[in-house]
Length: 228
Image (cartoon, rainbow, N blue to C red; front, side, top):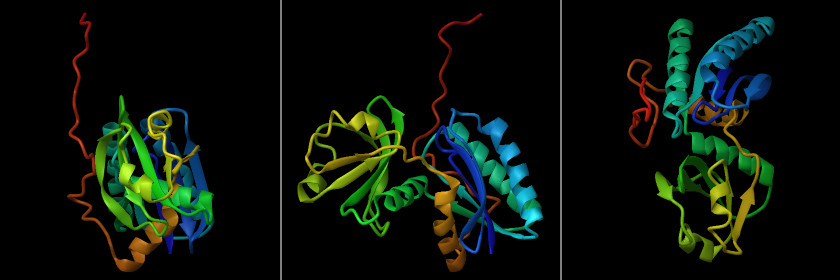
């Protein structure tokens, strides 16, 4: 099976990867801010060229489903749906926080404890959830305002590893000895490969016509303070 996986559209990271038989054969990553509308078409063109050069066939498209940036998610999911229509392949949606947890699990190796991915929302708010080391979800995804009591009951029971661009704001607030912080974890397409393969084997596909990203919170438009 060859998959084209796209991720990072829920944050400032934009990435595209192609895998075959569970192995990465192509990757493009842009980490310098929200440039998805410009970079994503270029990355996809290069990815499709890599598929052609390897004489492969795309069997599915996987996309990060959110939560995260409203605009980034719209761009990523709309592009993925367009590819699915054009290539006549199914759509796989992967929870962005699960993608981050997969990356953290690979980085940590055998270190014990629970995994807490965090995507920056605003001020002291993050999008977060809680996974065990097998990526079983222990809490529903939520928008949480971080304070000294956040995850207190879990921290009293054992170590938790916090990561993602929302975890930075927690370092000075969460003071437990069981709180660990892991740097440089972002949602990348390469970390979707194993999760997408599992979804493909189990036939967990989305309805391309009606699928919408998981925004978690409604989009809030703002009015410019200065008008011409």
